[in-house]
Length: 386
Image (spheres, rainbow, N blue to C red):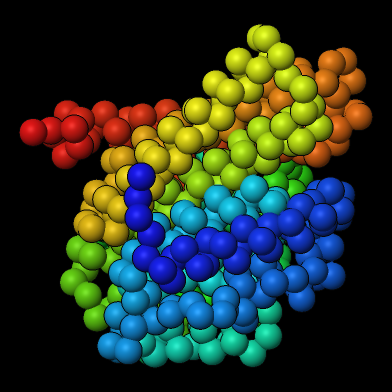
Protein backbone atom coordinates (compact mmCIF):
# COMPACT_ATOMS: atom_id res chain seq x y z
CA UNK A 1 0.00 0.00 0.00
CA UNK A 2 1.05 3.62 -0.60
CA UNK A 3 0.45 6.22 2.08
CA UNK A 4 -0.89 9.43 0.54
CA UNK A 5 -0.07 12.98 1.72
CA UNK A 6 -3.07 14.66 3.31
CA UNK A 7 -3.55 17.03 0.37
CA UNK A 8 -3.63 14.12 -2.09
CA UNK A 9 -6.01 12.09 0.05
CA UNK A 10 -8.29 15.14 0.27
CA UNK A 11 -8.27 15.59 -3.48
CA UNK A 12 -8.98 11.92 -4.11
CA UNK A 13 -11.98 12.01 -1.78
CA UNK A 14 -13.48 15.06 -3.44
CA UNK A 15 -13.04 13.90 -7.02
CA UNK A 16 -14.48 10.51 -6.04
CA UNK A 17 -17.58 12.33 -4.83
CA UNK A 18 -17.72 14.44 -8.01
CA UNK A 19 -17.46 11.44 -10.33
CA UNK A 20 -21.16 10.70 -10.02
CA UNK A 21 -21.96 13.99 -11.75
CA UNK A 22 -19.93 12.89 -14.76
CA UNK A 23 -21.68 9.51 -14.86
CA UNK A 24 -25.06 11.24 -14.96
CA UNK A 25 -24.14 12.96 -18.24
CA UNK A 26 -22.07 10.16 -19.81
CA UNK A 27 -24.60 8.85 -22.32
CA UNK A 28 -25.80 12.35 -23.21
CA UNK A 29 -22.23 13.40 -24.07
CA UNK A 30 -21.69 10.19 -26.03
CA UNK A 31 -24.66 11.12 -28.23
CA UNK A 32 -23.83 14.81 -28.42
CA UNK A 33 -20.23 15.93 -27.64
CA UNK A 34 -21.39 19.55 -27.47
CA UNK A 35 -23.24 18.63 -24.28
CA UNK A 36 -20.03 19.46 -22.42
CA UNK A 37 -20.95 23.14 -22.80
CA UNK A 38 -24.04 22.45 -20.67
CA UNK A 39 -21.92 20.84 -17.95
CA UNK A 40 -19.35 23.56 -17.28
CA UNK A 41 -20.70 24.22 -13.77
CA UNK A 42 -20.18 20.65 -12.57
CA UNK A 43 -17.55 20.58 -9.78
CA UNK A 44 -15.40 18.01 -11.59
CA UNK A 45 -15.41 20.05 -14.80
CA UNK A 46 -14.59 23.24 -12.91
CA UNK A 47 -11.78 21.40 -11.14
CA UNK A 48 -10.26 20.19 -14.43
CA UNK A 49 -10.61 23.69 -15.85
CA UNK A 50 -8.65 25.03 -12.88
CA UNK A 51 -11.58 27.00 -11.47
CA UNK A 52 -12.38 24.92 -8.40
CA UNK A 53 -10.13 23.80 -5.55
CA UNK A 54 -11.23 21.30 -2.89
CA UNK A 55 -11.52 22.87 0.58
CA UNK A 56 -8.39 22.37 2.62
CA UNK A 57 -6.32 21.41 -0.40
CA UNK A 58 -2.77 22.77 0.04
CA UNK A 59 -2.14 22.85 -3.71
CA UNK A 60 1.02 24.91 -4.19
CA UNK A 61 4.16 25.39 -2.14
CA UNK A 62 5.15 28.94 -1.19
CA UNK A 63 8.45 28.57 -3.06
CA UNK A 64 8.21 30.10 -6.54
CA UNK A 65 7.85 27.49 -9.26
CA UNK A 66 7.92 24.57 -6.82
CA UNK A 67 4.53 23.18 -7.85
CA UNK A 68 2.39 20.91 -5.64
CA UNK A 69 3.44 21.03 -2.02
CA UNK A 70 3.47 17.23 -1.84
CA UNK A 71 5.95 17.05 -4.75
CA UNK A 72 4.09 14.20 -6.50
CA UNK A 73 2.34 15.70 -9.55
CA UNK A 74 2.27 12.45 -11.57
CA UNK A 75 0.73 10.48 -8.72
CA UNK A 76 -1.76 13.33 -8.25
CA UNK A 77 -2.86 13.09 -11.89
CA UNK A 78 -3.20 9.32 -11.52
CA UNK A 79 -5.50 9.61 -8.51
CA UNK A 80 -7.67 12.24 -10.18
CA UNK A 81 -7.79 10.42 -13.53
CA UNK A 82 -8.86 7.08 -12.08
CA UNK A 83 -11.66 8.54 -9.98
CA UNK A 84 -13.05 10.81 -12.69
CA UNK A 85 -12.74 8.16 -15.42
CA UNK A 86 -14.72 5.87 -13.16
CA UNK A 87 -17.43 8.53 -13.45
CA UNK A 88 -16.94 8.90 -17.18
CA UNK A 89 -13.71 9.03 -19.17
CA UNK A 90 -15.39 10.83 -22.06
CA UNK A 91 -16.60 13.65 -19.80
CA UNK A 92 -13.18 13.95 -18.20
CA UNK A 93 -11.35 14.15 -21.53
CA UNK A 94 -13.91 16.59 -22.95
CA UNK A 95 -13.51 19.04 -20.08
CA UNK A 96 -11.68 22.37 -20.52
CA UNK A 97 -8.30 23.00 -18.93
CA UNK A 98 -4.57 22.78 -19.46
CA UNK A 99 -4.47 18.98 -19.88
CA UNK A 100 -1.45 17.72 -21.90
CA UNK A 101 -0.56 21.26 -22.88
CA UNK A 102 -0.11 22.03 -19.19
CA UNK A 103 2.30 19.12 -18.70
CA UNK A 104 4.35 20.34 -21.67
CA UNK A 105 4.41 23.86 -20.21
CA UNK A 106 5.74 22.38 -17.00
CA UNK A 107 8.61 20.77 -18.91
CA UNK A 108 9.43 23.45 -21.50
CA UNK A 109 7.55 26.64 -20.71
CA UNK A 110 9.04 29.86 -19.42
CA UNK A 111 7.24 31.77 -16.68
CA UNK A 112 5.96 34.27 -19.25
CA UNK A 113 4.57 31.48 -21.43
CA UNK A 114 2.84 29.83 -18.48
CA UNK A 115 1.37 33.17 -17.48
CA UNK A 116 0.03 33.67 -21.02
CA UNK A 117 -1.68 30.29 -21.15
CA UNK A 118 -2.92 30.07 -17.58
CA UNK A 119 -3.98 33.70 -17.63
CA UNK A 120 -6.32 32.91 -20.52
CA UNK A 121 -7.58 29.74 -18.84
CA UNK A 122 -8.34 31.72 -15.69
CA UNK A 123 -10.68 34.10 -17.54
CA UNK A 124 -13.32 31.48 -18.34
CA UNK A 125 -13.48 27.76 -19.21
CA UNK A 126 -11.17 27.29 -22.19
CA UNK A 127 -9.80 24.23 -23.95
CA UNK A 128 -6.24 23.46 -25.03
CA UNK A 129 -4.86 20.85 -27.42
CA UNK A 130 -1.59 18.97 -27.92
CA UNK A 131 -0.62 18.21 -31.53
CA UNK A 132 2.17 15.71 -32.20
CA UNK A 133 0.79 12.82 -34.31
CA UNK A 134 0.79 13.22 -38.10
CA UNK A 135 -1.22 11.45 -40.82
CA UNK A 136 0.52 8.28 -42.08
CA UNK A 137 3.50 8.92 -39.76
CA UNK A 138 2.25 8.70 -36.21
CA UNK A 139 4.43 10.36 -33.58
CA UNK A 140 7.82 9.36 -35.07
CA UNK A 141 10.10 12.38 -34.66
CA UNK A 142 12.37 11.29 -37.51
CA UNK A 143 9.46 11.35 -39.97
CA UNK A 144 7.81 14.58 -38.84
CA UNK A 145 6.92 16.86 -41.74
CA UNK A 146 5.20 19.78 -40.02
CA UNK A 147 7.62 22.67 -40.62
CA UNK A 148 8.63 25.89 -38.92
CA UNK A 149 10.07 28.41 -41.38
CA UNK A 150 11.90 31.41 -39.85
CA UNK A 151 10.06 34.66 -40.59
CA UNK A 152 13.08 36.94 -40.16
CA UNK A 153 11.76 38.52 -36.93
CA UNK A 154 12.70 35.70 -34.55
CA UNK A 155 9.42 33.88 -35.06
CA UNK A 156 8.22 31.24 -37.51
CA UNK A 157 5.55 30.32 -40.01
CA UNK A 158 4.03 26.93 -39.19
CA UNK A 159 2.87 24.58 -41.96
CA UNK A 160 1.73 20.95 -41.98
CA UNK A 161 -0.97 18.65 -40.66
CA UNK A 162 -1.68 16.84 -37.40
CA UNK A 163 -4.19 14.10 -36.70
CA UNK A 164 -6.05 12.53 -33.75
CA UNK A 165 -5.80 15.70 -31.69
CA UNK A 166 -8.31 15.85 -28.86
CA UNK A 167 -10.41 18.99 -28.36
CA UNK A 168 -8.66 20.96 -31.13
CA UNK A 169 -11.97 22.16 -32.58
CA UNK A 170 -12.81 23.69 -29.16
CA UNK A 171 -9.35 24.86 -28.18
CA UNK A 172 -8.20 28.46 -27.80
CA UNK A 173 -4.54 27.48 -27.36
CA UNK A 174 -2.60 24.63 -28.93
CA UNK A 175 0.86 23.15 -28.41
CA UNK A 176 2.29 21.90 -31.71
CA UNK A 177 5.51 20.02 -32.50
CA UNK A 178 7.25 20.76 -35.80
CA UNK A 179 10.68 20.67 -37.41
CA UNK A 180 12.63 23.85 -38.15
CA UNK A 181 13.13 24.01 -41.92
CA UNK A 182 16.53 22.70 -42.97
CA UNK A 183 17.39 21.01 -39.65
CA UNK A 184 17.69 17.41 -38.53
CA UNK A 185 16.41 15.55 -35.49
CA UNK A 186 17.44 18.17 -32.92
CA UNK A 187 15.60 20.81 -34.93
CA UNK A 188 12.19 19.75 -33.58
CA UNK A 189 10.51 22.42 -31.48
CA UNK A 190 7.26 22.77 -29.59
CA UNK A 191 5.38 26.03 -30.09
CA UNK A 192 2.21 27.61 -28.74
CA UNK A 193 -0.42 28.72 -31.23
CA UNK A 194 -3.56 30.78 -30.91
CA UNK A 195 -6.18 28.73 -32.72
CA UNK A 196 -7.98 31.91 -33.79
CA UNK A 197 -4.98 32.95 -35.89
CA UNK A 198 -5.27 32.68 -39.69
CA UNK A 199 -4.19 29.35 -41.14
CA UNK A 200 -5.28 27.11 -38.25
CA UNK A 201 -8.13 24.77 -39.18
CA UNK A 202 -9.52 21.82 -37.18
CA UNK A 203 -11.89 19.23 -38.71
CA UNK A 204 -13.76 16.71 -36.58
CA UNK A 205 -13.07 12.99 -37.02
CA UNK A 206 -15.65 10.28 -36.45
CA UNK A 207 -14.79 7.98 -33.53
CA UNK A 208 -16.36 4.93 -31.91
CA UNK A 209 -15.25 5.51 -28.33
CA UNK A 210 -14.42 8.54 -26.17
CA UNK A 211 -16.60 10.66 -28.43
CA UNK A 212 -16.66 13.56 -26.02
CA UNK A 213 -12.98 14.34 -26.65
CA UNK A 214 -13.75 15.18 -30.30
CA UNK A 215 -10.61 13.96 -32.07
CA UNK A 216 -9.67 16.19 -34.98
CA UNK A 217 -7.49 16.63 -38.03
CA UNK A 218 -5.55 19.90 -37.96
CA UNK A 219 -4.33 21.76 -41.02
CA UNK A 220 -1.65 24.42 -40.49
CA UNK A 221 -1.21 26.89 -43.32
CA UNK A 222 1.45 29.53 -42.58
CA UNK A 223 0.27 30.01 -39.01
CA UNK A 224 2.37 32.78 -37.48
CA UNK A 225 4.29 31.84 -34.33
CA UNK A 226 5.86 34.84 -32.55
CA UNK A 227 9.27 34.29 -30.95
CA UNK A 228 7.79 34.48 -27.45
CA UNK A 229 5.62 31.42 -28.12
CA UNK A 230 8.49 29.08 -28.98
CA UNK A 231 8.88 26.71 -26.02
CA UNK A 232 12.21 25.78 -24.50
CA UNK A 233 14.37 28.55 -25.95
CA UNK A 234 15.91 28.97 -22.50
CA UNK A 235 17.04 25.31 -22.58
CA UNK A 236 19.82 23.55 -24.54
CA UNK A 237 18.69 22.30 -28.00
CA UNK A 238 18.99 18.68 -26.84
CA UNK A 239 16.23 19.27 -24.28
CA UNK A 240 13.63 20.77 -26.63
CA UNK A 241 12.64 17.98 -29.05
CA UNK A 242 12.77 14.26 -28.30
CA UNK A 243 13.75 14.81 -24.66
CA UNK A 244 10.69 16.96 -24.00
CA UNK A 245 8.34 14.52 -25.77
CA UNK A 246 9.69 11.54 -23.80
CA UNK A 247 9.48 13.47 -20.53
CA UNK A 248 5.89 14.54 -21.19
CA UNK A 249 4.82 11.03 -22.19
CA UNK A 250 6.52 9.53 -19.13
CA UNK A 251 4.43 11.84 -16.96
CA UNK A 252 1.20 11.22 -18.87
CA UNK A 253 1.25 7.45 -19.41
CA UNK A 254 0.50 6.60 -15.77
CA UNK A 255 -2.53 8.91 -16.10
CA UNK A 256 -3.69 7.07 -19.22
CA UNK A 257 -3.30 3.82 -17.30
CA UNK A 258 -5.43 5.37 -14.56
CA UNK A 259 -8.13 6.31 -17.09
CA UNK A 260 -8.21 2.68 -18.21
CA UNK A 261 -8.42 1.61 -14.56
CA UNK A 262 -11.34 3.96 -14.02
CA UNK A 263 -13.19 2.46 -16.98
CA UNK A 264 -12.52 -1.06 -15.70
CA UNK A 265 -13.75 -0.09 -12.23
CA UNK A 266 -16.91 1.43 -13.67
CA UNK A 267 -17.78 -1.79 -15.49
CA UNK A 268 -16.82 -4.01 -12.54
CA UNK A 269 -18.87 -1.96 -10.07
CA UNK A 270 -21.82 -1.79 -12.46
CA UNK A 271 -22.02 -5.60 -12.36
CA UNK A 272 -21.84 -5.62 -8.55
CA UNK A 273 -24.60 -3.00 -8.33
CA UNK A 274 -27.00 -4.62 -10.82
CA UNK A 275 -26.26 -8.30 -10.13
CA UNK A 276 -26.05 -8.45 -6.37
CA UNK A 277 -26.39 -12.22 -6.05
CA UNK A 278 -23.45 -13.72 -7.93
CA UNK A 279 -22.81 -17.40 -7.34
CA UNK A 280 -20.40 -20.08 -8.44
CA UNK A 281 -18.41 -19.38 -11.59
CA UNK A 282 -19.88 -15.90 -12.00
CA UNK A 283 -18.76 -14.90 -8.53
CA UNK A 284 -15.26 -16.31 -9.10
CA UNK A 285 -14.95 -14.43 -12.38
CA UNK A 286 -16.10 -11.16 -10.83
CA UNK A 287 -13.73 -11.50 -7.87
CA UNK A 288 -10.81 -12.37 -10.15
CA UNK A 289 -11.45 -9.25 -12.23
CA UNK A 290 -11.50 -7.19 -9.03
CA UNK A 291 -8.12 -8.59 -7.97
CA UNK A 292 -6.71 -7.70 -11.38
CA UNK A 293 -7.98 -4.12 -11.01
CA UNK A 294 -6.26 -3.83 -7.61
CA UNK A 295 -2.99 -5.23 -8.99
CA UNK A 296 -3.02 -2.87 -11.97
CA UNK A 297 -3.66 0.06 -9.64
CA UNK A 298 -0.61 -0.80 -7.55
CA UNK A 299 1.54 -1.03 -10.70
CA UNK A 300 0.20 2.34 -11.86
CA UNK A 301 0.98 3.97 -8.51
CA UNK A 302 4.51 2.55 -8.63
CA UNK A 303 4.95 3.88 -12.16
CA UNK A 304 3.78 7.36 -11.11
CA UNK A 305 6.13 7.42 -8.13
CA UNK A 306 9.04 6.32 -10.33
CA UNK A 307 8.42 9.22 -12.73
CA UNK A 308 8.02 11.69 -9.86
CA UNK A 309 11.38 10.57 -8.50
CA UNK A 310 13.09 10.67 -11.91
CA UNK A 311 11.30 12.02 -15.02
CA UNK A 312 13.31 9.76 -17.34
CA UNK A 313 12.10 6.60 -15.53
CA UNK A 314 9.21 5.84 -17.86
CA UNK A 315 9.51 2.10 -18.37
CA UNK A 316 7.14 1.18 -15.55
CA UNK A 317 4.75 3.77 -16.97
CA UNK A 318 4.70 1.82 -20.23
CA UNK A 319 4.10 -1.41 -18.32
CA UNK A 320 1.22 0.17 -16.39
CA UNK A 321 -0.35 1.62 -19.52
CA UNK A 322 -0.19 -1.70 -21.39
CA UNK A 323 -1.52 -3.72 -18.43
CA UNK A 324 -4.33 -1.33 -17.54
CA UNK A 325 -5.58 -0.99 -21.11
CA UNK A 326 -5.64 -4.75 -21.55
CA UNK A 327 -7.53 -5.03 -18.26
CA UNK A 328 -10.07 -2.37 -19.29
CA UNK A 329 -10.90 -4.29 -22.45
CA UNK A 330 -11.15 -7.59 -20.58
CA UNK A 331 -13.45 -6.21 -17.87
CA UNK A 332 -15.73 -4.26 -20.24
CA UNK A 333 -16.08 -7.28 -22.54
CA UNK A 334 -16.76 -9.60 -19.61
CA UNK A 335 -19.32 -7.34 -17.91
CA UNK A 336 -22.20 -7.83 -20.41
CA UNK A 337 -21.90 -11.61 -20.03
CA UNK A 338 -23.27 -11.28 -16.50
CA UNK A 339 -26.57 -10.06 -17.98
CA UNK A 340 -27.13 -12.50 -20.84
CA UNK A 341 -28.15 -11.92 -24.48
CA UNK A 342 -29.06 -8.37 -25.38
CA UNK A 343 -27.03 -6.92 -22.51
CA UNK A 344 -25.52 -4.15 -24.60
CA UNK A 345 -28.98 -3.02 -25.65
CA UNK A 346 -30.47 -3.28 -22.18
CA UNK A 347 -27.43 -1.72 -20.48
CA UNK A 348 -26.16 1.04 -22.81
CA UNK A 349 -23.58 2.23 -20.31
CA UNK A 350 -21.79 -1.14 -20.56
CA UNK A 351 -21.77 -0.83 -24.34
CA UNK A 352 -20.25 2.65 -24.06
CA UNK A 353 -17.62 1.51 -21.56
CA UNK A 354 -16.45 -1.19 -23.96
CA UNK A 355 -16.06 1.36 -26.75
CA UNK A 356 -14.22 3.77 -24.45
CA UNK A 357 -11.87 1.03 -23.26
CA UNK A 358 -10.84 0.34 -26.83
CA UNK A 359 -10.25 4.04 -27.39
CA UNK A 360 -7.82 4.33 -24.46
CA UNK A 361 -5.65 1.65 -26.09
CA UNK A 362 -4.64 4.20 -28.73
CA UNK A 363 -3.80 7.04 -26.34
CA UNK A 364 -0.08 7.73 -25.83
CA UNK A 365 1.00 4.68 -27.85
CA UNK A 366 -0.56 1.28 -28.38
CA UNK A 367 0.22 -1.84 -26.35
CA UNK A 368 2.97 -3.01 -28.70
CA UNK A 369 4.80 0.30 -28.41
CA UNK A 370 4.58 0.13 -24.61
CA UNK A 371 5.93 -3.41 -24.57
CA UNK A 372 8.88 -2.40 -26.75
CA UNK A 373 9.65 0.45 -24.38
CA UNK A 374 9.44 -1.90 -21.39
CA UNK A 375 11.72 -4.40 -23.14
CA UNK A 376 14.32 -1.69 -23.68
CA UNK A 377 14.17 -0.88 -19.98
CA UNK A 378 14.60 -4.52 -19.01
CA UNK A 379 17.40 -5.02 -21.53
CA UNK A 380 19.30 -1.96 -20.27
CA UNK A 381 18.56 -2.88 -16.63
CA UNK A 382 16.85 0.46 -16.06
CA UNK A 383 13.93 -1.48 -14.64
CA UNK A 384 14.00 -4.78 -12.78
CA UNK A 385 17.80 -4.71 -12.46
CA UNK A 386 19.88 -5.25 -9.35
